[in-house]
Image: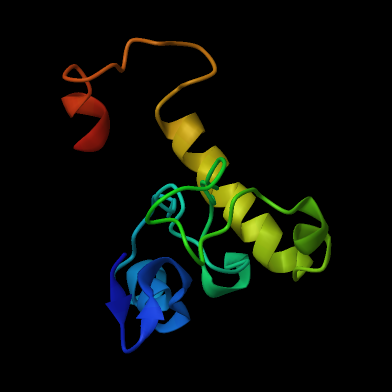
Length: 111
């Protein structure tokens, strides 16, 4: 997975700060499967996609999400991550509709 200045992109606080604060990104940041190597919520990662099992090419990757680590995280970072994920769900009206299924999402992404 990509690294910036020797740090995995999904855990790179400096890069995620640029995305959220300087660029004004209004979405949420989700890791790729097996991409996280540590709890990165305090760095600005909003949703971790853990791996399942092990196999070739997964060395050093997390195999599952550790809820105990979340309990040790800064509560404000957890709240911010949850807010960003829920804001996207609200903006796309996901609780009320399933009409946004690719390729019919253009009107939602261009708002």
